[in-house]
Length: 447
Image (cartoon, rainbow, N blue to C red):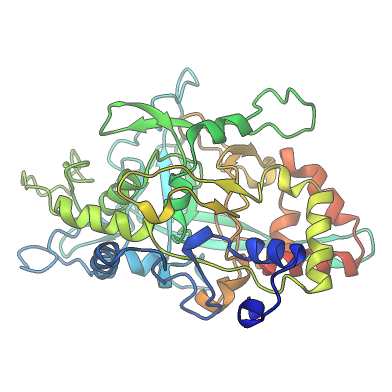
């Protein structure tokens, strides 16, 4: 980019490097600061920017109990009081440290299907639904509380380096009702929310073409699409969002978060999350969030900019990129995709992007299983998370906790937790020299 004011035109290498830097296409911003995940897409129209800023304000709005005239409707049971409290600076949450409360992490719960068929979605736990709400308004009991302790283990790489891994163990206590013995529980850390509109704009045909559920090419990588329930269309649709790709679009994802995380009703989910439970206030309220606000918040997360890649000319980063390919990491973390048209969101339409995901489910092995199915996803299957912005998490959110439950304290730990379809890739990293591992991490931190 420094050559823009030069009389000499870009050579082919400069053009390739510039294109690689544009992780979000025309939505990319060159901001490596703590604001890296919170910037509006620079290609928004004036009207689009106005709507984005309205959504930004609502994303930060704090909900309170009725009869407040401003942002009423919280609860009666909930996990947090605003979107931004979980997605700090639009970035990634983490598990608690020591005796902290769970601030940006929640727990999905369900019952096992008697016939093993989860095509209709997770089976609610009577008295709890499909998410454990660990907070409640005054006079109401939380559904339960959770504590965590970690079991430390270590592995030794082939060149003798020692890497410490930690396994979380969760305990649900003080539940207002006894929990079933066969309850299925899944911890979920709040993911970053930038770049989501671009992922929504990737054609369904592109995602399905990447799937290889029966591993027809015998490369050990299958990739499976999750088909989930679209509430508005009343039919199954391709899942894209959430740790197990259990939401079909961002409007439903946002409405679900308001409903399940804060107890805020919308036209999409008009019943209280506590309906049918003893905590329910029995009032038949109108939706507590208007369609205008719901659409503005959805537009906000659709149009957050993606931070640019950095250090592309660094030889260590370039070597790391080669090692990433050689270890077959790119078989799931697809570097480059192209979006199509997303209705009413021109900024993310028809863009070449570098998200490093295929949005498909992959078996990650026994070590990462949560033993909870979610539509077509079984307990060991997780959606490939995008890697863009990976190297800026510490800058934005002050930590480097990775994976669905934040157990990994850095990139190398996260890699070494990979199993299942990713076992060969993990072993390739396990066998690398320290120099090569450092190069691989330097590449991932450049994203």
